[in-house]
Length: 329
Image 1 (cartoon, rainbow, N blue to C red):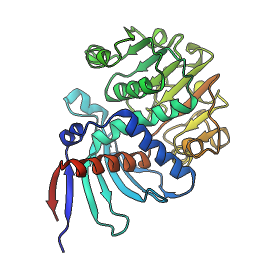
Image 2 (cartoon, one colour):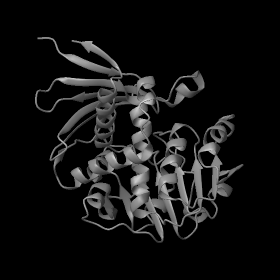
Image 3 (cartoon, rainbow, N blue to C red):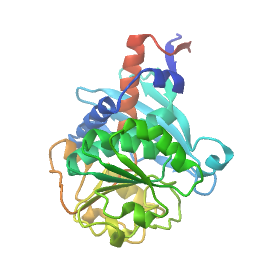
């Protein structure tokens, strides 16, 4: 018996007009569901057909009042940037938990971009100092942009945005896109990482994920009270940043520790099981409190609950607006 599937392209998703606050709220609901033990989410598995490249499969079912499920197939290919191709691509599949039928297939690049920034915003909501004024962004691609949009929601007093990216043209494109979105902030393009992070209240690194990281950002370059957010695994922050804090947080402890145990990422001094203060599920479920002083470090790898919640939000709105293309299978 045939059934209908809603296809949502990147253009369809862009036209929905979803804002960062809505996506942050959805991502936080997913975190809380995980923290309450009402979900099934194995650690994402992957293959690596080329050096520093990955193709991940990310399934998740969120139960309780949410009752949503889906799976994302996503590729990350850093060399694509020099070819004029996107770094992150893939498809997100929403599935009816009652029947197992596919409800929707949509562009995973859009979902990944927005949900990753939203997760950083949720983390900053619980661990950031609301009075933060200086934000440093290392890596000025898509993730640099959406993370700054998320911080804009959490830190209304941002006065200065410091930017660094070694890729020619990236700073100029970043400023052109982001300055109109934060008209009250001064944007400063820095010549090196050290000057970019000096005295910053919040530092986020959005560089390519690599198997042999250089970890170019040591603790000595950061101020005493700082929020250090990694969305690039262990590529940027030195181990003396993440292992030095008594407040090391990850989005999901099971996924972080499983990935660490595979022996590729988070090696050579990154926190082990006994050094994880909490994951964001525990925080959003109310089991552990946030911390707003001192060095606070987070590795936000990106988890499937974010994808399912963001995709569900987009799907519901697209259905209400009559957007997308219906495909009969």
